Image: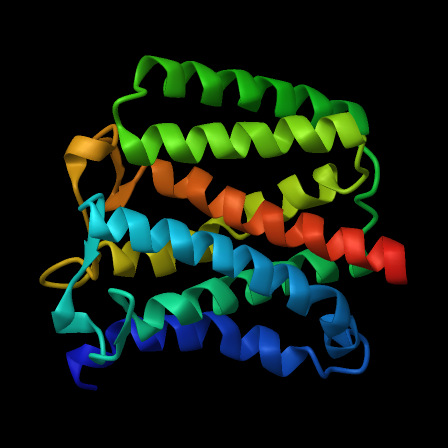
Length: 229
């Protein structure tokens, strides 16, 4: 396969199986699309704007060697698809976890974990406020968690369990994007704007960036499901 399709292949492999199994009768996730599409689009627009700004000021960039060459506002086509494929796969997994397993409890544990995570995120962002990727990501995730705790949402335990499960495919897909198994990374990070801590090839911040992306999608999905379901 030509290397310029590397990022496109990552997107495709992340969504192909969740999409196919969406039509499996015992799952029928396609019936949930009406709750998924609007939050996905709204979240994608937020992240795309953020992406355009950060790409423009050099917080990160995209290696032309591994993208097909179609760009819009400085972002490759594959990056736009990323904000559809990854949320779809993860909300699908979240839906399946809630469908097949009893994971509605543990509200107290989820609250304690959320408070710990908020404290950690705000402490790191306050002590490294000059690092744009670190501080912006951590503050946004902390703010979202505070808001969800104040709203006393019920889905945080299921979300956390799902998130820790998908860390395995996350490390595989994000590992490829950050250079694992490749001569160069697909996404190149300016280490002057992050902590400089890598989990293999993956910046430490990526885990929390991913959590923010998926939590926004999940919260929107649950909100629409509750209001329209």
